[in-house]
Image 1 (spheres, one colour):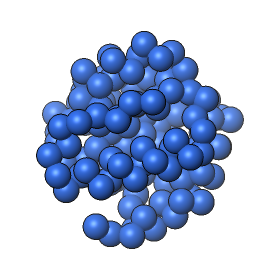
Image 2: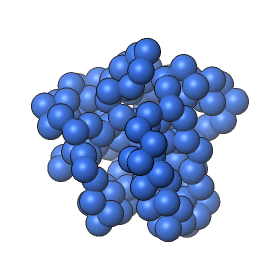
Image 3: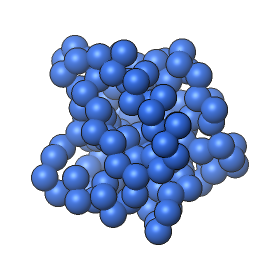
Length: 133
């Protein structure tokens, strides 16, 4: 597996403070981060780039992050998608849509680190189990 600094994360989060925290935390963990605020912007990004993992909020303007999860996993089962929401019951919805894991907000740094590590380690395996917070 490549070093974390070689991994690209597409972050889809519309809340500026949450986005800022996640960008800084992921950069601290030595990931390259591209951030979008909407599913439409993320879809455009995915047409020209291939991130190693997608971290997507469930509640986004215009279109649900769950739809992004569904489409992304249909396009590539190889690329893990991690869903997140402040509403814990959204975890089941995102996992059923194909997310590899779910993070409940507010996200703690150590939980983010653990889930990112597990999801990327699993990427080479079957990926059948989903990490939950």
